Image (tube, rainbow, N blue to C red; front, side, top):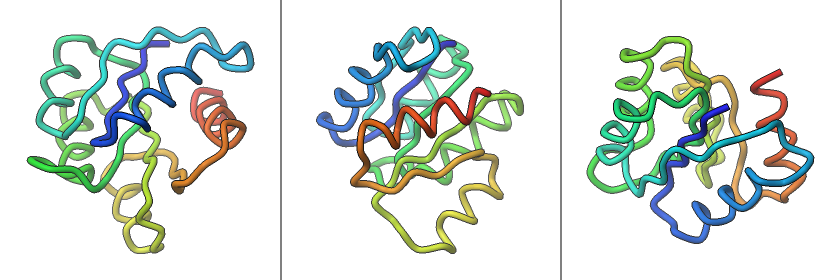
Length: 121
């Protein structure tokens, strides 16, 4: 599976990238790391990932707008929202725009691996 990681935190991007290589994960190739929605859209059109991890609060273009734009390009893409925004309304908005999963920050390695495995199952 090809994975695009979108988060304005370099620490979170690096952590998800490190976990993508974990033996408990399905085989995974990271095709891009984006720090905002605008960058993510550019990388998405170039690399055509199967799975995207998406933060919601980012500069330039937030995660909800980015989800909408990505799903318009590829309705089959799998999107896991990884966000510190823990209110149900935000999670529901993300899912209504096309995301398939939601993981709250802070998360454990096991939670992220479990959420990604569930997404691609």
